Length: 197
Image 1 (tube, rainbow, N blue to C red):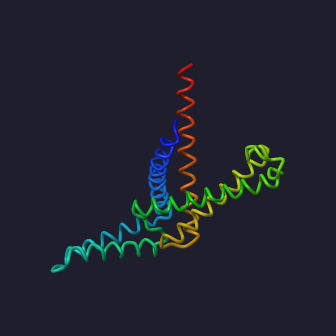
Image 2: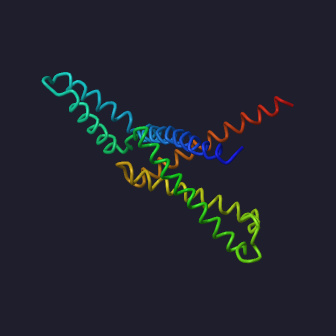
Image 3: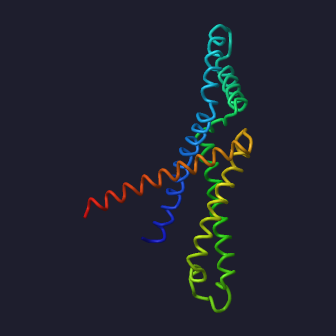
């Protein structure tokens, strides 16, 4: 594969990855609202609002729709839930999280390689991983996973109208969904490999 083809694949993979991440983020928010009971409480409020809405007349539909959506977002927050972001906003949140996550991994990798003596004249020409052992690599993965979780929590708090404890809950559920998907994909791959033997 040439360098030009590789550069063309990067934005496609990035777009696809952020889109999948956005779907998972929205699923995590919806699951959080379901587990906290906020969804059912807001549905009850919506039914009462629909009855009041049907009784009103001489309204501007566009302004009324916007007003009702804002009121629903406020109710979700008051009921202990987290408003579900729209899809473009979800993609932006995942993109920001990805940039921070990659930056954290790079910094951690450089620090660990430097601590392992991977820098200096004697390290010239070696791959960065040559300066660290398996234990350091595992440590980087653990630290980066924790940093990624906290980063996603902070991003949810900063980019959604919610509190930090609720943002932590959403981030935890997003990670649970990621893990379940990874396990499912692993099981399918093992099944395919076993079936080919």
